Image 1 (tube, rainbow, N blue to C red):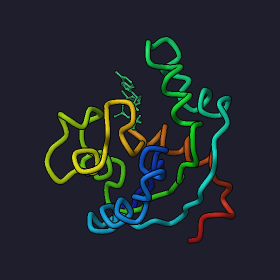
Image 2: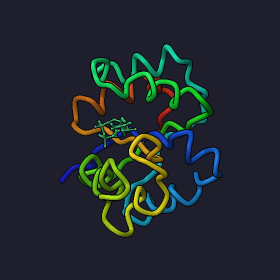
Image 3: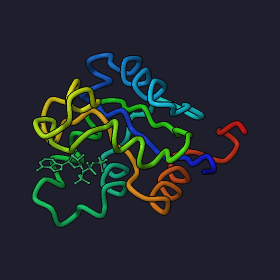
Length: 140
Ligand SMILES: Nc1ncnc2c1ncn2[C@@H]1O[C@H](COP(=O)(O)OP(=O)(O)OP(=O)(O)O)[C@@H](O)[C@H]1O
């Protein structure tokens, strides 16, 4: 299978606790290569646009506040089946349901403050990568 790329965010709860390196080690141990990465502080408007699909959900405002509350690390991960592989090592949205050894089982604080985001399909990965990175920022 060809290499695939996915988009990832290390969320504010994790950057606040200085967990970027430990989370990146999990990606690399799982065979995912970090091909682009930068630390940004999202505005409330950017967070709202990024999570626009959840606009009608009861947790939308809380989610947008959280995502713009501190810097995040946005990343492009590459590997075989990168989208599914990343979802697997992230673990379930709610850390209390996440399988042992997954990022959320080890690091997430709650269903909202759950340390990482990962694209769920090729179409969303492409849109999310293009939203945060220009082609020139990604080598090879
Ligand atoms: N019940 C909830 N209360 C608060 N925040 C929530 C709740 N459910 C989801 N969220 C937040 O919204 C994000 C998006 O929800 P979604 O159901 O798409 O989960 P996901 O696909 O596992 O996560 P992500 O899209 O961030 O990778 C979650 O990662 C979490 O931060």
